[in-house]
Amino acid sequence: MFYSYILISEKTSRHYYGHCEDLEIRLKRHNAGKVRSTKAYLPWKIQYFEEFPTRAEAAKREKFYKSINGYQWLQSAGII
Image (cartoon, rainbow, N blue to C red; front, side, top):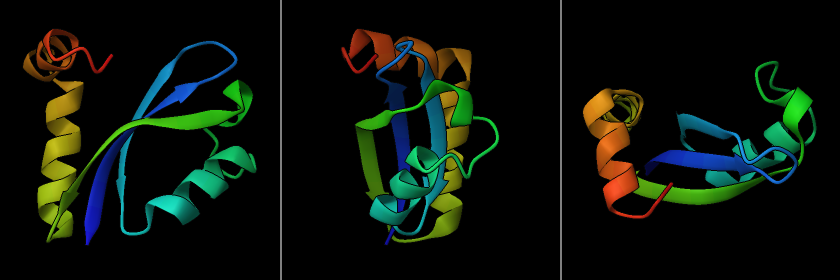
C-alpha cells in the first residue's frame, strides 16, 4: 500500500504534504532530520493520511492537497 500524508510540525505548526510506501519509516526519516525540507521544523507528527493501492494514486492525492481546491477541502473538513 501507498500513502499520501500531511505532517504538522510540533515546533511551528507548519504543514508538510507527501506520499510514500511506508509511513512509519518515512516519519522516522523526517524526525531524524534526513529530509532537507523538514529538518528545520522538528519534531513532526502525522496529522492526516490516506491509503492507496498504487504510488500514482498517492502522488495524485498529494498534488491535490497542494492545490487551492485541495487546501480548501482540507480546511472545510477540519483536517488543517
